[in-house]
Amino acid sequence: MSGEHSTYSPTSGLGRWFDERMPLPRLMHDSFVSYPVPRNLNYAYTFGGILSIMLVAQILTGIVLAMHYAADTTLAFASVEKIMRDVNSGWLLRYLHSNGASMFFVAVYIHMLRGLYYGSYKAPRELLWILGVIIYLLMMATGFMGYVLPWGQMSFWGATVITGFFTAFPIIGEWVQQLLLGGFAVDNPTLNRFFSLHYLLPFMIAGVVVLHVWALHVVGQTNPTGIEVKSKTDTIAFTPYATIKDGFAMMVFLLVFAYFVFYLPNFLGHPDNYIEANPLKTPAHIVPEWYYLPFYAILRAITFNIGPIDSKLGGVLAMFGSILVLFVVPWLDTSKVRSAVYRPWYKLFFWIFVLDAIVLGWLGSKPAEGTYVAMAQVGTLYYFAFFIVIMPVLGLIETPKERPKSITDAVLAKNGGSVSSQPAGATAAPETRG
Image 1 (cartoon, rainbow, N blue to C red):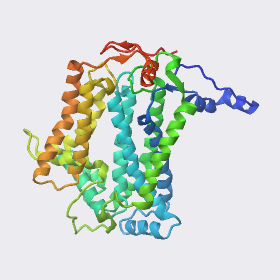
Image 2 (cartoon, rainbow, N blue to C red):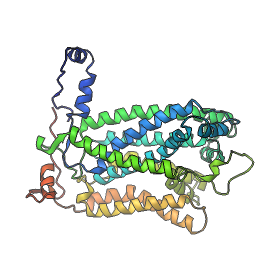
Image 3 (cartoon, rainbow, N blue to C red):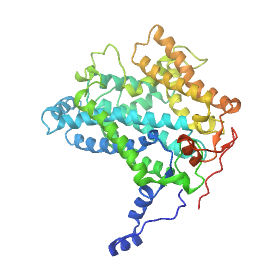
Image 4 (cartoon, rainbow, N blue to C red):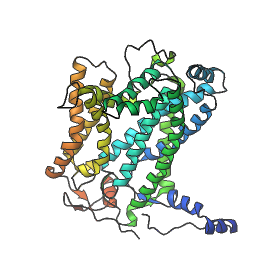
């Protein structure tokens, strides 16, 4: 779709003068007004816009909070309390930022699952998917460092446990841990490092988001049928059609966000984090934020040695591997059919995978003992099997359903019209780009 002729026409002399020298208005018009999108996009495709709004909200609230925060172990906890009590609307800023992080991850998980369901990672969109995974990794790092800043009990001990993972790596492990901590234990240098990086990383995320959107506009948007655009009848202008749908979805999402901010502001946090950090008193059960819990369960599921790899290193490798495997998903899925709508067996295994991820999140919040460990091991096995075994094998043996020949046919079929179909497993002709 990047080859479409621009329809932007300046209406004033100043506009024409500006357009000839720096065509920024033309770029915005071509990217967010006249940009053609598939006509059958559903509400699962609105979360890209929702994530953009949440990123802006997190950056703006974070900048204001940073003006009042003191990155010092003797002052950090008190500075957060001062923000809550003495800064004008400080309680609102703090709750918007802390709950905004959770809402950000809710949106990104739905966005990623939509990509897995509709095959948005397949050629020619591999780089688009990889940039999305990079954004996710940056989000995880930013969220972890932000969780340390309130300097509560869970902040301190969470930082101690997470940075301790690196010691599992031979030779370089302790060096990496000390580099992160700025010393031999979580202390003032650690807090300063984490505050600096927590402030910097959102701007890096914004930069990668620009690349992500750029890559999207080069290869074009996918759609629920998984069929490429073939003609102008398959598309509609981004504005007003997609923007109205995006705007409605954003309002609904923001209403849910507002409900947590005003009625359940501490529901997603941990009560121990409202106690000032005490290096001499360990919490009964150390857990990360909810959006890290599935990976925490995978970490603790490895309770046995694997040859020369001990259980500690094995757990750390499994945890990092569960994220890194996402980078190679485009090459693990061997099916020629993009969308799970036409892949009955993949659809079944996909929803089992979603349930498995939810169960792993629940197990991550439980003590690592008894049946919880056994359940986590089964969940971890299925998590990796889904990507490494099920995806490649299903692509070779699954018989997909017949698909419409075009997006327009799919829309007509949904509305009771007559359509023509293409054979199962056939690949739609790629869109011709100028």
